[in-house]
Image (cartoon, rainbow, N blue to C red):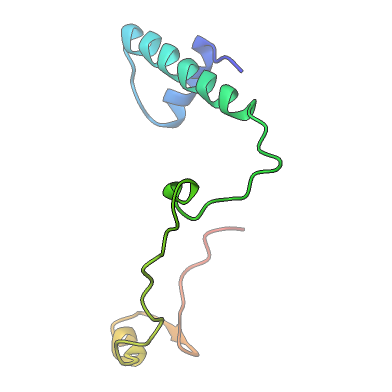
Length: 99
């Protein structure tokens, strides 16, 4: 998938960026190089590969240092919600933004 100059203009418009012609050309080149790398990675067959938790797990056993999932602070919901304009059943109420 190669991007065109029109694609770069549209992306810049959506991102609210003003690109000079030289910048636009540089972005086009860089993004197309990036997508070329992605296409090479997609071409690699990974069907029989197990996911790794850590990249070094290929060559050595890796022990993940995980902490216990324990409560470390008291519940302060009511104190945190005192300054909220609207709360109902312990939840913040916000204006509807999506129809």
